[in-house]
Amino acid sequence: MSEWWTYTFSDFLLFSPRTYYRTIERYNGVVWPGHIATVGLGVAILALLGRPAAWRGRTVFTILATLWAWVAWAFLARRYAAINWAAVYFAWLFALQALLLILIGAIRGAVSFRPRRDTAGVLGIGLLVLSVGLYPMLAPILGRGWRQAEVFGMVPDPTAIATLGLLLLAEGSRRWILLVVPLIWCAVSGATLWAMGSPETWLLLLAAALVVGTRTSKVTTITAVSLPHG
Amino acid sequence: MEPAVPLSRRAMIGTLAASAAAAVLHPLSALVPTSPITKPIPSSGERLPIVGLGSWITFNVGDDPELRDECAAVMRAFFRNGGRMIDSSPMYGSAQAVIGHGLTQLDRPSALFSADKVWISSGSRGPHQIEESRAHWGIRRFDLLQVHNLLAWEDHLPALLRMKAAGRVRYVGITTSEGRRHEEIERIMATQPIDFVQVTYNVLDRQIETRILPLAQERGIAVIANRPFRQGELIREVERHQLPAWASEIGARNWAQFLLKFIVSHPAVTCAVPATSQVAHVVENMGAATGPLPDAVMRRRIAAHVAGL
Image (cartoon, rainbow over all chains, first blue to last red; front, side):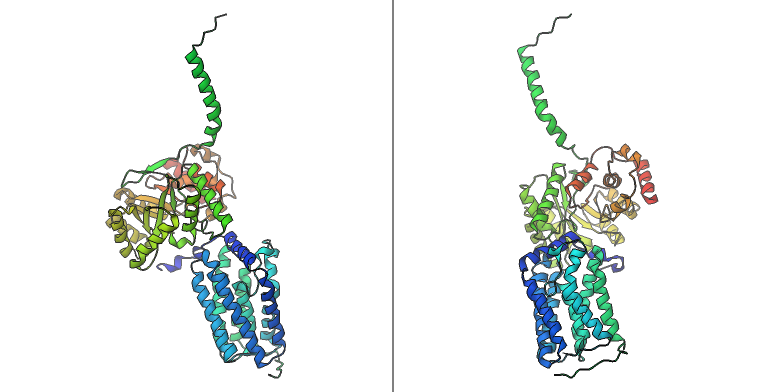
């Protein structure tokens, strides 16, 4: 792309906000009542995190990988691709993340969780609760109605934020690998929402910034309370 | 009192017929818009209405049946108001398929002037992409094919010119937007036998007035003006102000017509391609193709007024 510096976010916006949110609305209509299942899985993840054990960690990663694969196929490849030709590439990216979650988290067990009360722990749980419990409420709060609600495990944004939250709670050197795709998605979707003038852009960018900031600085000055690993 | 002039039977019948016709036609004539002003394509003399229809963002509605029907309604209003040129690109997501849906609903209007683009970095895959685009539109051949944003133009342009020679497309062109690669555009305009050039032109983005528009006139190349409202941003900005009273001197009843009349009144500009998803807006836009157009003095006044807002 020549003269790339002359392009702005809005130059890459292919659709109107109305078209984007109606795409989500029509998708929600097709996959309902699957939302109950994905939110239930989100709650299950939160419950599993409370009691650390190796098998619980593997279960969390298996659930998460399944949801990333579902979002890749059901939303990105089958729905979003109708208005965004780049969505096919994003679908592959999400499929790659699902594969990495399975390989690194579920099969090799290279990343584990432990409850922590330091900054990372609080932020991690906060992002999880936000994405599973609060994110669907943004649509009605912002005047778009429940039909356009973005639900964890169904659409990319809350799924990516929840994953970032989870990885803040994780231990293991390989967790960095699992952060890459969610961070890329936060940048891509954040830019799209920015161009559309949607306030949710701040949540994505804030989540990404918090994760990067927390992980790159040693802010765990608050004493971490380590619980025994199972 | 003068005696009444007797009416002959033929005159009586004629008068009655004329009255009946007037009664029937009058309400209709109020609905049938004035024919739009046209300008010739320099390379052929074929005349085109000075306002066309773009499809960037507005027609990329995927497979949403409600939004597709809204786009078809926009196209219906466009053709009813004398419109001809619809412009799209493979880059615009589902816009080509949505245009095809609209054309099917409208029973393939014969007035259509189909303008599309080739947009792929591989020269060898250009023909395949063009064929896919044609299938989306559901037409026999395109009237105009352009190399989008000059992407791989060294490969695509010769292929398009061969297609033109073989009668598989009627006109060939190149495009850019927002002032990018103007030197290269000029070089191609000066050396290649293209029929059209599509560039950004509006009351605030006027870089092309110095070199590209004079070159187009000199070389006999039709000019399509894209981004006439800066993707709606310009309209939103000026609509906060009152339309000047003197806008009526050029027959502009709203800001859209005021801004469009500035663009299409340039002697080198053949047409502008505003995009919209609303019937009311397309009717407004087509209104810019009727009535008086600003002369050079009025054009300067328009530019100064908008710049001062």
